Length: 367
Image (cartoon, rainbow, N blue to C red; front, side, top):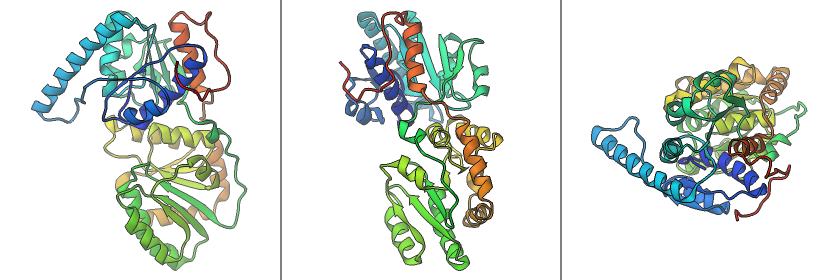
């Protein structure tokens, strides 16, 4: 299992790995000690092989040269390791961490299956696209980056709890969830904070739940308490499916994990793409949802306190639009993505006849 750096790369791979374990396979992750995989993979009970590798984009010459050297050394190490351990397949979520094991798989002739959750593939998946056995995507338009007949729209693995969220009945108060991810978003945080006087003056029937991340939590929480507005400010929301279930409108970034969760839960959203995301993939994700009528797209530079207030005001007078956006979002959901990805891996490894998958995702360690 290759791919790391962020939870968006690691968490879906863990979901696929658990399905493979349920079929009797042994699974090993490859990643770095500084990425999210260093914490998440061992916690999930899987072995993690550490490599040293860095990114190549937007770097100075000296740093890029060092990263190229690390890539070569790590790839040679993976080629040797694959010759010794003889894996039957490699699964990649992309990202620079996936480079060495993906290249080693191609050099060793090992079946390579990639999952590309964004509308536009990241650099690693784009580079190796023509040689993959299968490419698992979330958007129909992504298929053009891979060989004809090699793609399948599986979606991104999402926790079952998001699929269990039911449509909310219209109430007298609009429940708004703001989240810029676990680290928070300065743009979303500042727009929300600066909008409070507008909401106080207008007396609109809204309740705001705001996940700020650590950096801005204390001042935003203290300021919000002074407004008297209904709601709460949280540093981190551990039970995000429940937060989704309580919300009528979600305001968030447009990473692959975020939009997959919105689709699974069937929630109306305003998507503000992070403008510095690699290959501007968040903008492409948001555009796909906006085109489907499943979300409203707003650029980061345009998301101000006034824009936030005006958007909420418009939705307050149009609950039918919220409901319709939620239904269109759910139409984009792809349940069973982890199980399907595992099944494809088994097929490409030539093991499907000997291994079988169960419907249940086991909560047990890799053996």
